[in-house]
Image (tube, rainbow, N blue to C red; front, side, top):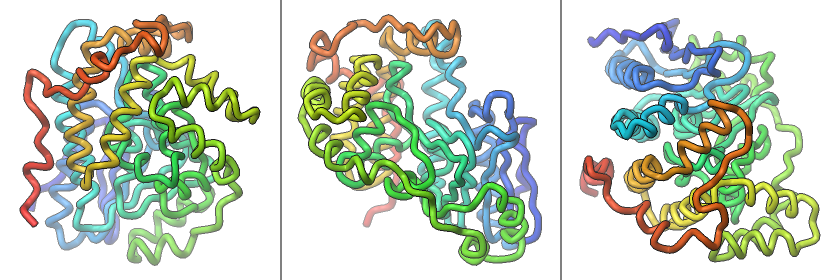
Length: 355
């Protein structure tokens, strides 16, 4: 049997019938590094073949959330230097996302607090996804000049109507009820009940344990907004989406349009194109292959470095996008996001067994 070994940033333990993965960078809301991704993957390998472990649970240390995403400051530095560390990170991260989705044992994600970007990747592909009244789930990439990845366009592309398009473009977060509505989670458990749930997971099946503590969520907001969201976001271009949002006369729609105009124009157009392409694909692996091309291309754009600078490094919240407006982003600018990276494609779909 392979014995799983963690790092200081990933704590591993077994208790009863469960193996626990604790992301342990609480000051960074458990943002993922490459070493953390590898440690999680190693644990999954060990526990998949360990008959004493029936359920795997992933949780986050601290009070703020499961995981705020990837370590985007490291991505910023790598992009500025023209390095390849981010590409290597994404290769292993996306493989981990695919593995989680096909894991042979129940994989329980405790999605309490902030769950964004890469945090969605290590949770929302799991078989048992638990949110709480504190959950804030989002794919906020367009605000840093990036595109939703880690299978985010797979998940959002399959949300009801155009809800996923709305969330992908605006980067808006959802609470418990809307996480269930959009297919990002399965169950709601009060945050105060999580310690009891964890204890039950050590002795009961995942389904039995969750059923003991699951509750109905408080009302969400997206269900009431479906009419204008679907009408506006089914448009073929981001420009038309923005026009429709402004024209509805609905305050929330106008707010969404204003939000879009503050995002990277290039990232918005690349996100819409990726989302629409991902809907035509049948497997998560195919979408991750697509997103890998898109992520590698984003590394070469000025908006990624500028977006992270504005939001994380300098924190002036005043990014200067290149180009600065939607009409200036050409079809050719978008098409380049879908070309194979110099280091080669990810190739997850090609590794799937034949039907």
